[in-house]
Length: 248
Ligand SMILES: Cc1ncc(COP(=O)(O)O)c(C=O)c1O
Image 1 (cartoon, rainbow, N blue to C red):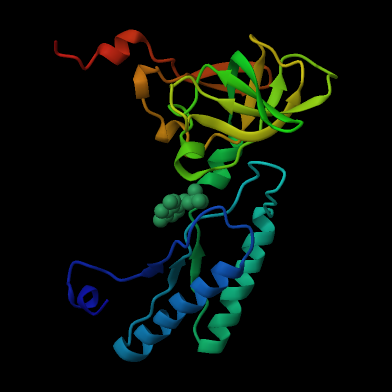
Image 2: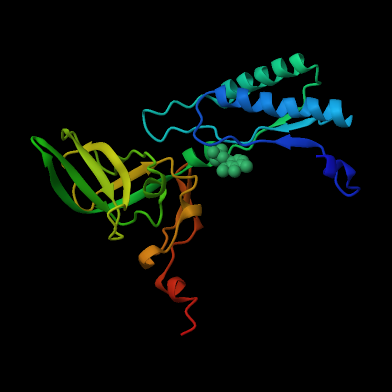
C-alpha cells in the first residue's frame, strides 16, 4: 500500500477480501471485516490515507441439497452491514462503501441439468443394503464438481409422476471413470428406468464454466425458459466442433 500510494498512476481506493465459498452464516465475514478494517485504520494512522471502499467478496451458499440452509440476501447483507458498522465504530472509522461479489448465489439456482437415464444397475452393498446406479448421458464433462471436490447434489425424476417407493440411487456419468459421479446419494422412485428424464438442480455455477470435452463427449446446450417460452443460449456441441481444431 505504501508503494501504491507513492505511485503517481495508481489510486488506492479500497480493500478487498474473499474468504471462501458455500458460506451459510456471517461468522467468517466478521473475522474478515475485522482484519481488513484493522488495515484501513492502520493506513489512516500510519500513512494518513483514507480508504473508503470495502469489498468483502462472494461465497454466499446455495441449496444443493436439503442439508444446505442459505439465508436470504437481505438477512446476509443486514448481518454483514451490522458487523462492519460495529467494527467501524470501535476503530473510529467512517463506514466505507461496502460491496460484494456473489457468484454462485446468483448463477447457481438459475439452472438445472436435464439428463436421460441409460443403464441402471442394482448393486449390493452388503447385508440388506443396495443402491441403484443410474447412468446418464452426461457426467464429469458437464459437471465435474462432484469428482473434483466431492460436491453434493440432489436429483429429481422429471417428466413423469411415480408413486413407486423411493430407492437410494447414485447418478453416474458415461465417461468410463470410477469417479464419474454426478449425485452421490439421493432417493428416486424405485421404478426409475432407461429413457426417464432426471434433473439435477442448482447447476448454474461452476458447471458449464468447468465443462470439458473429456473423452470427446460434446457439451450440452444451455436453454433459457421463461413463461413457457424457450430460447437457446448456447447450442449443443457437434462432432464437427470436436474435430474443428484438428489440423490433420
Ligand atoms: C475474488 C472472488 N470473488 C468472488 C468469487 C465468487 O464466489 P462465489 O461464487 O462462491 O460467490 C470468487 C470465486 O472464487 C472469487 O475468487
